[in-house]
Image (cartoon, rainbow, N blue to C red):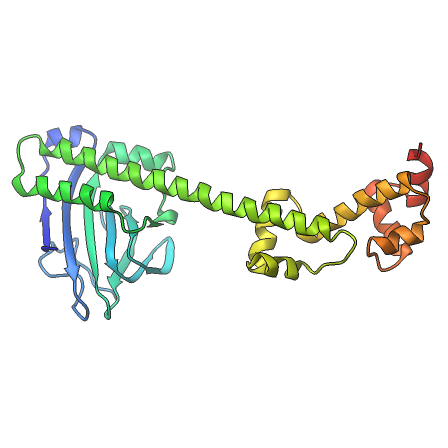
Length: 293
């Protein structure tokens, strides 16, 4: 990688286009090298202690190495290769590569009514400024196209590179949506597996922590996601399964209520009767008398 950056002149015509590029570049920051590299204008240069606030949007892509990032809306976060950082105007931020690894970075700065509308419609927000895209040849190619056109500044290059910026934003938005769907699919699969585990343990009092352990996820994550998908906590879901089975046993068998309570893992028939009445609005005995054919 050849280090390069350029800050661009902008005409009224460029501004009227709706999106214009202010700067672009790429840098290889070797390990134990001070950051950022010298030569940037004062309003773009910063140090880690003070950070900075820009009057523009930027897309920063880390294609190699690692580091850290922090902004007004995002706590200090580790950055790995393949990460996109979105910077917003008026938003304080700071970032730097790890001294041991350095990093390779690509960036483009831009402004305009088009991106303002995108942000206004909440397609991009400062709270979601760290996006994991992976090391991607297409993303690097788009940055290199922008950089290539800025070197020559041929007539009409601004609308051309602003179009590439829109392509970049489209790629970022699409891939984050796909990743969200992928994560949702994984979560849904795990919750469905949890439902099976709970159904097959309806006659026991299986600890919910054990279910999370079997799924190889944390208990707090499992409880939160399970409730998001089902509308109830795992323990309540299991209790609901027990009540549903109790209804079948009450109407379909002549088993004593005490035996049904024992079969479903309740600690006592009294506790079973109390829970059943809370859930169904009547006692097990009354339910059997009114519902049994």
